[in-house]
Length: 262
Image (cartoon, rainbow, N blue to C red):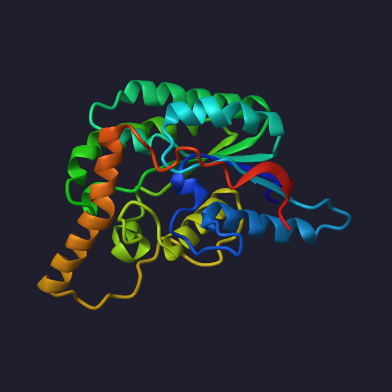
């Protein structure tokens, strides 16, 4: 029987915040972590006499691993949740001159700090950017090193690893938002299924399965999409890097307290 979880804290950056999923009535993105919380809440509700499932999401877009460590680790550990998801470091890897050894050190400290309280921790490998993103090949050495590091941490029985790198379905542009950095609603749905599977839940569907073939795009359509991406997403991203700003500056977590999910 899989472990019953009564509380869950999500830690990380935009991936975990839920960027580019469907919007909820309160104006926040839903995201794969909310989808996992909903499934675990439904599961617990079926247990006789069980308390309400509690959920917090401390993730904020744009955060580097040092900020996740400094701003989220102690708060998450102090909540004493049964389950924690931890994702971070990719924003660091995207920046030139990334100190990958320091990223690993801080990610490892986060994992150890969360495990020290007895929580089950779920971690992730990145998808393969070289298979879908122009210029992604330059990131691959760091991505592969991080992948090996996360799998090494996963040797701990209390750490489960969701291996997105080895799932070619994430090469499909339809699993990504227009900005090409964040998941689409279908991408979030698949990551949620992957997390639940890693926690021993039966798969509701094969999250690794490819989507049906897409209609081919003509050259003009591709060039138009690239132009919109450069103007709407790449340009502003570069601007923030040059001025030392982040999309998450001043933004609070969407669920800062461990409260009943429903």
